[in-house]
Image 1: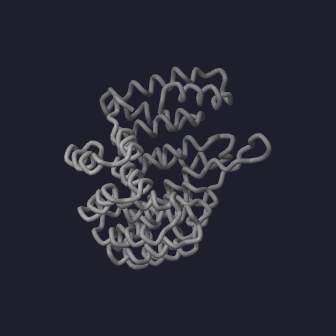
Image 2: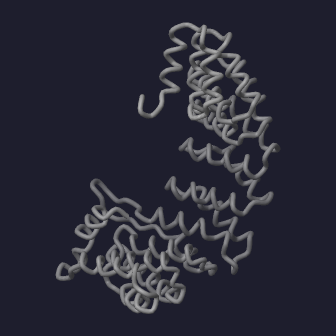
Image 3: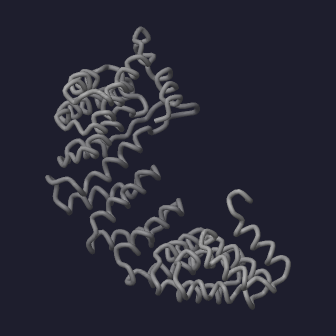
Length: 344
């Protein structure tokens, strides 16, 4: 956490106890990073029982950094306490966020605190209404569930399916990551269903594609490639980029077929970028051939896509050779896409 941001938090949220020098207490806790474990533990234990949530949060963070696992009972006690009148005692969920993250870092494998955090919604007043400040907490707790030892796999899946419908994007994203960690056919089927149902945020659908390609490999290629024909432009783009980032050799054929039938120039460029991202020899040759003999707009788009490899001397040489006799527009694109950082 940046010091200036931390001070802003202190000044905004420590008004409950104006007589306390909260900044000085935070600085004292920061010095515990260099103290011995024997000296740090008692001070951190005391800080975890403090009434100011920012002090609790700092103590939890340092305990996790130091891996002081003897403090886990104190972390759990502080966590429970912050759920009592949560808006008053823990505005913005700073304390609960830090404690849940500390428990994960310390490999706490008991599910109870994470289930409590997963269910928590904290509405706080903002200009014009209320805002839920517990989304980070719910996301952290969703990610923690697959590693817990005292909960059945089926129950974890049930909780994660519920989290996929959370109104907060970060919670849905973390639930997807948790599903991917679980692996297995159940997780894959849930991910496929989520892809079919879609999401108001295209990046969530793109994340689903990424996880499916990681879990299923070649078996997911045709499923994801089918979304290259989706009515939503952003979904088509997410599918293309996921196929490219998979780096599967078989993704090249799906992407080149899509490029050959596509007429929209913007999506054609996305497809070329995805081909470049595969880093496969066939995709490189496709792009270089397009640069050599393609129409001017296609050749320029191929150069732009190949710019992903600007740090490769060999690919740069091949691109420069292929563009040597091309039109000025193509050579200008080459200079722009392959400009070194000091030239950009």
